[in-house]
Image (cartoon, rainbow, N blue to C red; front, side):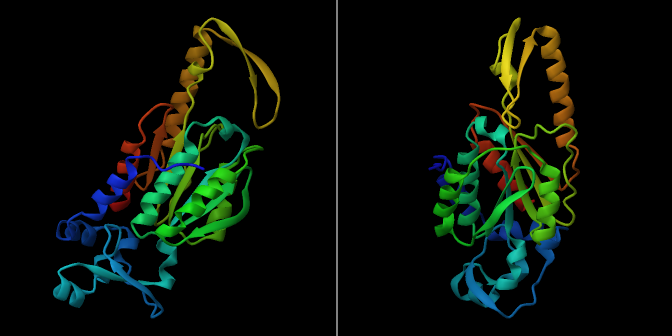
Length: 278
C-alpha cells in the first residue's frame, strides 16, 4: 500500500499552525471566486477550525471572541469547493517512479487541512466511478484505491478532462500523468485552478549514448529498436523542451510541477499548498 512521505506530517502541522491574522488581508483581496464565495445553504455540515484555504467571511466571529480561535461553518452545498484528482492509469504509468506515494501523500495533506478530495482514474477516458473522500479518516481508502489501481491502455488526457468537467463542478483539479502525448496543452482552468503534476523518466536513464535500445511501448505493446547517439539525444532533448514549454503554457491559474526520479518530493508539497492558498 502506498505510504505517506515522512515529511508530510510536519508539513501538515506547519500549515495548520499558520497565523490567522496574517492570512486575512491576502485572502480578502484574493480574486479567486472560491475565496469570495459566501455560500447560501442552511444545511450545516460542521463547524471546524479555520484553514488557510477558507473564505474569511465564513469565520464565526462570536466563537472567535469567546475562544480566541477562528472557526468556520461548512455547508453541504459547498462540496464544489473541494479538490479533484485525475489520475493517469494508462500503460505508460506502470514505470512511473513514486507516483502512487506522491498522490497518497498529497491526499493526506489536503484531507488533513479539511478539504474534500474526489478521485477519478483515466486512460483514454474516465475509468470507473469516482472515489469521494470527505475527511482525514478517509485517507486509507485513497491508499487502498491507488494500491489496487491497474495500469493499461492508451492515454487521452484531453478527453478525460472534458469528461471530468461535464461530470463534476469541482474547480480545483490535479492531473497526475507522465504527459507523453504529443501536442498536449493544459486545459483551461476556468474560474478555478489546475495543477499538472508530471512524473518524468529521463530517457537518458534507459540507455547509454552510442548504443541501441529495444523499447516496448506499454500502451500498444509494439517493440521498436532505437539508436541512442548524440543526434538522437539532442532530438529527444528538443522534443522534451517543447513538451515542457507546452505544459507551462496554461496561464496564471495553471501550475506545472515536474517530479524526476530520486528527487525529494517535499518541495513539491510545499509549492502546491502555497499556490492553493495564493
